[in-house]
Length: 175
Picture: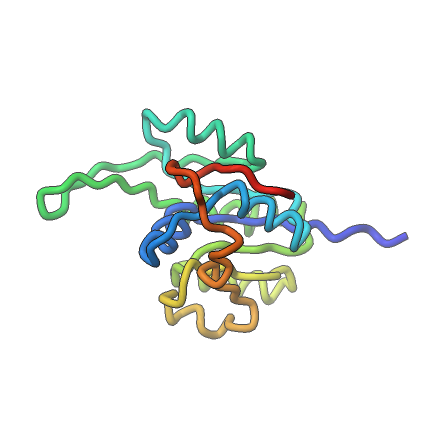
């Protein structure tokens, strides 16, 4: 009997979240996790996210939904007099997908529209491990154009993944 292929997802949470919000909606992370599991058989879904005090309940809920959270310390900065918080997770996502978890999965789904990941996509293509690239919307980096056959736009899944919960991270969904 052939071994079942293992599929892992590596998710740039800020890119995903800001990308769908820029299109005017909020992603239901529970529905998204179930979608990845049911449609593609994703066993492990790594969510790379900035660590910000006060968000402990949200982190707990995301873990209860089935995400494995990988935290990055955040940096506060001010732009045009407004405070912003950034947790750049690029290095951690690449490290997990290309080294730490590389031998544990057969195929990878990467969720980001960031061109900084083009080198990871090429590495995974060369190793025959890239399954899909989920981009938040149609405005993803031109550096990802060579990977068009792998790209799935999350905004085209809006009706199935939109949050009806005010927090934007939860909500009930049928499996």
